[in-house]
Image 1 (tube, one colour):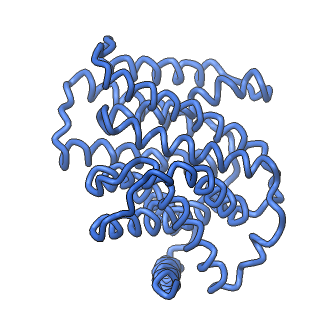
Image 2 (cartoon, rainbow, N blue to C red):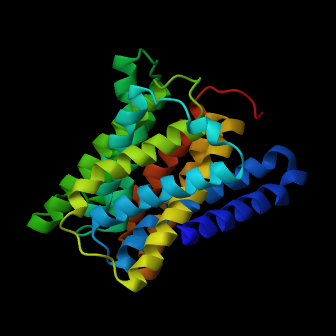
Amino acid sequence: MNCLLRLATVASLITHLWFAAYMNFSSYRYFYMAALAAVMMGTIGVIARYSEVAPASLTFYRLGLGALILALYLVLTGQLRFIAARPPLLVLINGVLLASFILCFLSAIQTISLTLAILLVYLAPALSAIIAHFLFAERLTSHTLLLILLAFFGFAMLQEFQIDSRIEQQQGLWYALASLITYTAFILLNKKVPDTVPLYHKSFYQLLVGSCCVLPLMVHQPWPEAQQWIWLVIAGLFPGFLALVCALQAIEHLPTRVFGTLAYLEPVVVIISAWLLFAEPMSWLQWLGALLILSSGVAQAWLTQDTEIK
């Protein structure tokens, strides 16, 4: 517990130093926060590969340690009131979805490439836009529909217009598809969480509920080895806690389209990491498909009507 308290203190200090460093940059500091959050979130695939920890274990420790460090951070900064109230039902359901899409993504990259998995997951904004058009009466313009179709065509290019018949590849694709579906549901339900619910409250309970959902899967998991604990703490601190704090600050001060654009740095980091660190091969057709998906996502984010930077 003392170790975790010191870890939270260090994380709090790092966060405050980050805030102070950009105080003179006015609203532009939130651009850096959004970019940093996306980069840190994109490291989870690399952590999964190097740590060699089972997907269930990595999901549990990322969410569980993330919730614990966030709670300690709120205690140290005098903001514990944000998690004192009872969470709404939608927040609890989103916690289940959060655990589901992370677990499915980490399971997918056991047998398919990081690039293929992350880009399939990042079709979620396009899929959620289609569903929201029918369920929530959110108007789908011709431009948005064209971008969505281009994104799905980009995924077909990524697959080189064929389906791999190997069983392990198909299993990985099913996991990635499940990650896409649960992430899409996560996006849609988050739209319905009342604006009166504080971001820290929502995030803490989603992390907590998500870790509790994975807890039963930990019964048959071996205790992590010493070197694996380093990766687990990194997963809880960086893609878990610090990425979350930076993202929440950016969400509060940036227009949705700007934050949505910067969020696409995450798959870029994953693709470059997979290429440089793990030598995952990419043909020119796959590079074009990846570029088409990312470009469509960025363009869709900029077409979103929003307010000015606060």
